[in-house]
Image 1 (cartoon, rainbow, N blue to C red):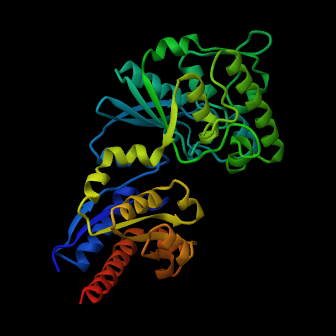
Image 2 (image 1 turned 60 degrees about the horizontal axis):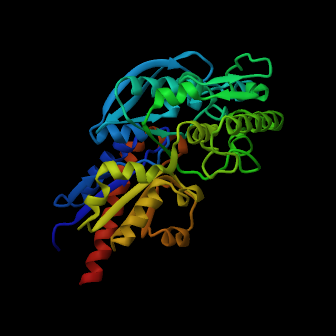
Length: 382
């Protein structure tokens, strides 16, 4: 058999390994199974947490600064700059990890720090912004972000409305002049892997609010607040976002960007793939190995492993997958284009053990999976 060309393209294993670390573990496992293999690591992301790690691996420059966190505490944050584009991960400023989720934080969390990151990038000369919106603690429709960029968000008495999604119940008027002047002709893209609208039963409050500490009472309050916010934006001349697909992503920060920054929503996975060389690496590859922390039903809806598998299948390339856990059936995996898959928890005494020893387990299971694939391939060609 000629030299086997393997593309290793995993997403992060949340809580255990970044996508870059996962790619290295799998690559080591592949080389243990076949020292002659030609291995190309291409860590990927879907526009959520961990996207910046992948961009740094692709050569992006890191910019560090301190900004307001979701509850106005100062937090260390950063963004990436590559080829004149600033890539800003909302979670760096207002991620759920910065709070202990509760009904209070669900109403109070805001995105002001995201606006500070964007403002810094603009002041530093960026003329293209790519905003990723997953993993936020906030449900403020991007109001805090726009306030940091110069918006005036006022109540019926002409006073500035406070920060946080709950405070938006009082908003009656929005002036976006300062934002538009600040932005100029900057092109903004929003990377998201969900299609939820801002409002309604599939909206930001109803679907994502409970994950951020909201009880049904706070979900109702946030829905009322976001309704007022969407109406005020519309009266300010912004596009309608209440029902726009993807506007509810990141607690509505995607909707705020669409309405006030002229942003267009696109697949976070597609945006990252543009930069990581995956498409080029797939040309001529014999095998792709992908994976993430959990291969489940959500993996089939815009997540990185499904995207990788689809691209590989289009090129007639076999796909193997490794994950912390797998809840998909063999038929579901096959329908997604995945030939074989292994879960780390099936080879560990506990989930906690699998998380603590993810690198070694991932390396060893990549070796086993690769050897099994090589044996099947040899039998098929014998």
